[in-house]
Image (tube, rainbow, N blue to C red; front, top):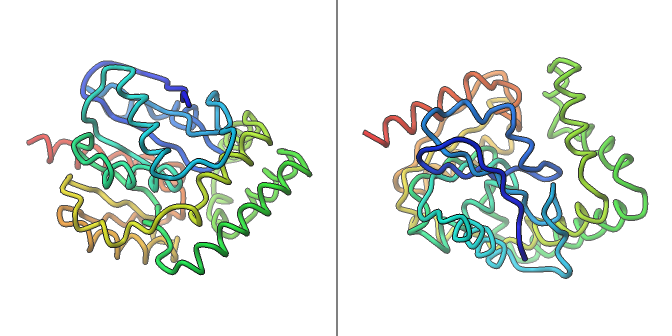
Length: 261
């Protein structure tokens, strides 16, 4: 499967992976935040301009597909920045293709669900959600998705930013989002917890102080990866890059400068 890639600027390659219902366009307001980088923003399966998967493909296969996209653009190792679902994909790439990951930046992401029965239950729940998206349409789902507790802190944002995010989600299709969810559900992701100590790349884990679930996950993730550091951003929830962009990108730039040195 071929995935769409949007490239901006010249310099050291920096791969951006968006969250569920996002796309490469999610990162458009931020492509100038890391000077000296060539930003490679990829549309994950079923999102943006990438096709919907014809069937359920495995999480490792998705990681292979993302790496193949970079092969097609002549990119070897890169720095990877993944938010939420995109962070889970970036972790899978780091475990499966370690030589392709120079540095790793993980924002509000889980290494997976350790318990197999809980994974199956989550996969079933996400399959049911995918079916409801196909039945009820994308607009109905986007309204429900924006109102879940995970995104409650976004209500602090300016109306124009919320409207931009809504329009970005609606630029997808119901069939694509549903198919992408069936593949990219955390219920179908192998638990990467046992593999985290093998990640050798310098790693930055960023979480919002108001996102209790992912704050706990981020602490455990940073403790398990040998060269990881944790940054907790105040007055932010799940979408740190959106809620506190100046602080988020300041942390990213400082991490890149330090690891360059």
